[in-house]
Length: 477
Image (spheres, rainbow, N blue to C red):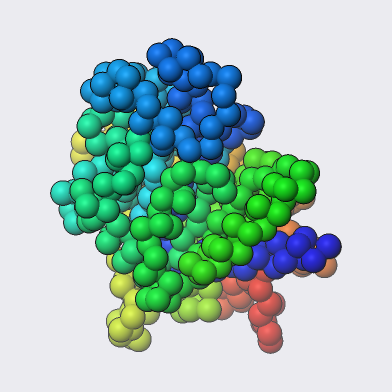
């Protein structure tokens, strides 16, 4: 019972700490080989080496724990170049993303580390977030390369497309700190500056043990707590005790361990993190030909920037009378407050989803719409026509909560009717009490009438606060 309570505490701490670090852009994900084989009982390492243990080694029936040593035996028999080519060919055939990769791309990550050789992470981003670009660094020389608006993917054990960079044999591991010291030093630096979440590693994984063996000085300079999610469903007393000893050792490196029984628990935790993070990103959708909602949208943009406790970000386009006005309101706030620790360009993200933009066709517009809505946690709707309707459809498909200002007409009126009728469906993924759900329903009803701007802003602020699980005192609602 003690272990379960401790895991519950660590899980809550993980979700809060890692989501807050993501919002500050001070988080990093470290992905092990277990993520590429979720749902399988077979170790990815053993799966990779098994055919070669049968031929040429002829030791397929023998159980080995030291997998880098087995890799070394195969390399000795075949020659290193032939061995690495065979490994590379095997990896190339197994690069399909899974549900964990799909969730991962919803996180606002700018740094990912991995010991994996494959292209699964890159393929996942290409499939689910084509607007996000990856800068994969598989050679030490690329460590300090900085590509603007790219996610830095550090493949510290090499890349299958360049077999000579692969780290897999005992010799590779023994000499890693000499040939790849830049990776070690940069990882050490990130571990002192960021909050890490390790996933896809097991306590017999040679990769994580290798990383820890090269980071003995990490705990001395570390200022952050890190987390590891360990998939372990063994009931054997010996393995349970070995796991306990290993997780206790990880504490010496500032790493708290959350033990889970299956990959579904990992998926749930990652989704909880994403939901907590994306609710800080608010998409404003809509348009207004006569700019009659200019003052309202300006106030929405300003309100989102003023609420420092929840650190909202504004996602919108440059649509006349809606997005453009909200951007103006956000900039007004920065001009009035002159913040020293906030960069306006990180708080306001403008998406090119306006019709008539030179060089952008309908297919590209939809890709940008998909990106804007995917990265948002909630969507506010003002007026709008066909383009806004497409954004509403994306929002529904992705389970985003919609806050329609029904009195503004156009598509927003349609959205209001649907949300009001199907409110429970829109709220199904939020962990809210019956009282909170009831309050949100009442607020949505009020958004059908054209009240004073200050009152409408308070309605929106209150809904967002409830979705975030926070409480606003003395609300004017």
